[in-house]
Length: 304
Image (cartoon, rainbow, N blue to C red; front, side):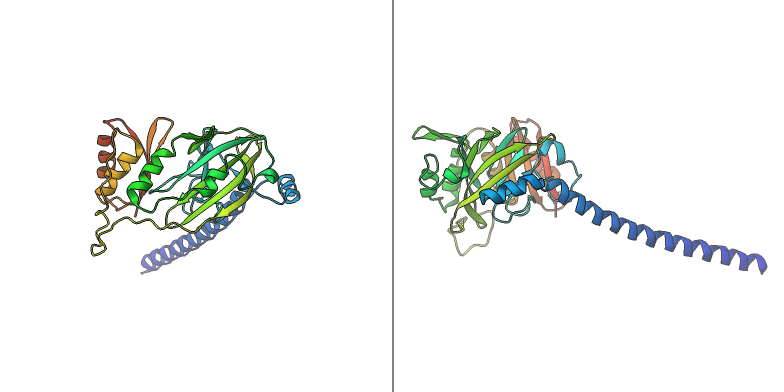
């Protein structure tokens, strides 16, 4: 009986210790997460000197991080601080991203039918830029199409075109001291025209960017399906693409029902981003590889 009582007492003691240890661990984990959130905010924030300079110029300011350095699971914010939304003033990829930084390039247009145009205005001050500035006037008057096939055409066009001796692309190299203008069309979310200047480049490759909003256009609503009687998400109007580009791969995936997958072409590599149903990862990757002539793709998908 004594042995039984002793065993019971020891078991109860260890159970209590285990419960205490577990609760302490939960508390410690919560504390560390709170500390991490504070540190993350500090890493993403511009320095005080940058903030003071931006205030003097009456413009906004943010820091954007190089994706190849920070988007490795270190941050809670999706995208590792390599994206920025002028609409939401957020670094999260989930909050209407309108510009990104990777491999010393700036880019616009990331998922769905969204796209955008960037142009480098050179060493011009933000205060001198308005809707009449050469390179800006075209983007002020630009009307994004509302039909999906036409939006796909504009998406392809954003890879690069020239008008009135001004070049427009969805991806441009970083030039410190230069000012840029971006028209970011995010269907069903936002449509903005922004002028920004790369104020400086920090030692870790991050950029300090000064910016001002030139125009906040009415949110464009994309017409995906003219067959209003049908609720089938895959019954979109057909779009014909040739080659093995990102837009064609995205269209193939969309026709298979993977409507939340965004396909991008970065550094000659096809990249898959977005959300897919649980258990469909292998199917999506296989479809993308087949459409990409058997070449490998980079997968940054999440299952829901």
